[in-house]
Image 1 (cartoon, rainbow, N blue to C red):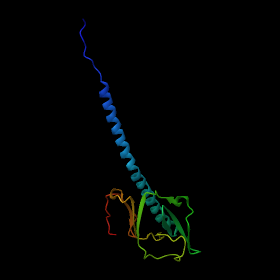
Image 2: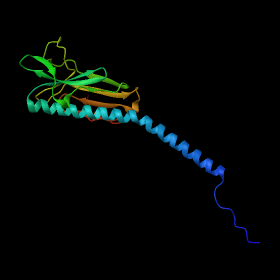
Image 3: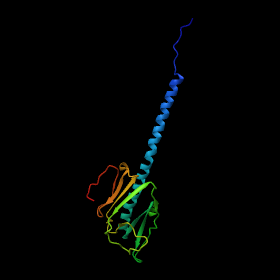
Image 4: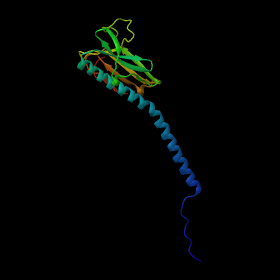
Amino acid sequence: MPPRHPQSGFTLIEILVVLIVVGLLAALAIVNLGGGTQQRELENTVRELYLLMQTASEQAILNNQELGLILEEGSYRFVVFDDQQRVWAAQEERLFQSRSIPDWTIITPYIDNDIPRLASDDDALQPDLLFFSSGETTPFDIEFNVAKQPDTLHRLQSDGIASIEWLAPGEESDGPQ
């Protein structure tokens, strides 16, 4: 009688346990990645606005014209001041086209309202923020958040003289506001 070799391999139960564990880990990974989607989209939205605001500030200086930013429900857009007609007009450059903000984003602007206005108060395109040709801006602090979650709070701010600052979640401002 030939010697018996011990059986090697996995039982069906062992294979099923491994498959269940791998499935649970995959489900957990998908749930964690899904929650980060809003945070990534919020960060991209804030980054885009931050870069556009810096560009608008530079354009105002280079072109010697005042630019403005209008924050609307679910979107924002840039406008330019027409010196001859003394009114705000839509910014025609493709770079400054109107952009939407995700519906779930909560925007809380804190804007200094004691700023000089360049047109009458009944001007339909009166901007919330101004980028002056002198390099100054309207003092502001704008908070972007996902459902008031403190770990997703992004802030764009400026004291009106210094450059625009972007504070990611957990960062604090260096200067007084």
